[in-house]
Image 1 (cartoon, rainbow, N blue to C red):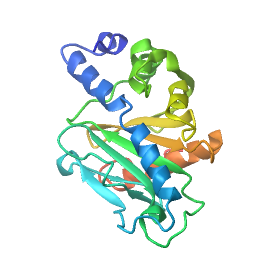
Image 2: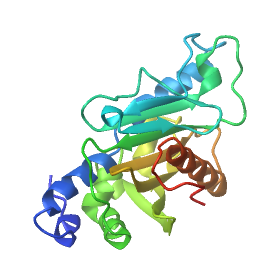
Image 3: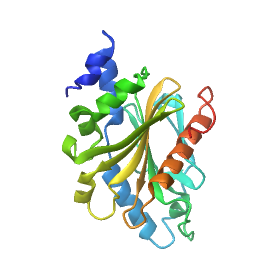
Image 4: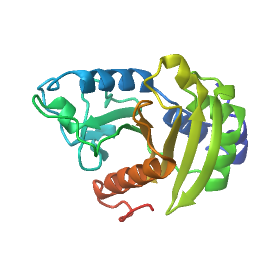
Length: 233
């Protein structure tokens, strides 16, 4: 698939390879299944009783994905093989029999990590790409640019934060809040996207979603020695 403005903006000869890596890492994958499965878990009395790890190694051990307190990795929905890693985190309590869903885990978190080392595109270039039809198609759950509206974009501590509305979420049923936060940043030589996906019946305010995402970014950095430390907020 063509990547248009990004490939034109990046220096040759790396432009095509880096553009493809960025496109694949930004691409929204598996969020429908993740939300449906986590909702089902939350609805089950006492969870499923299997437990879940607080973190998982991806990219051949090059990176560790971990969430804020109260979030654990869903091993059934996550993919950590040779391709781009896709990790889903939900309420730790939902995985433990007899535990109630705590109020501190009101969303599903996802992290996508590039399969190969990748240079970070310049922030302005990245934002222009994401506002282009190709970029909006990459982050649409339906793969259609017209479903995505970027409500805001801001850079803080080498992280691009995006507040997005995706109208294709409505086609997935009432479970998904169409507005969500996404962060794009480099971590130990890999390109990472992190998202906060709220439930429609338990929506997060804009500020609540942003605070949770900055906590997630800070936890990812803390879990990976050599990455910039501290909160992204």
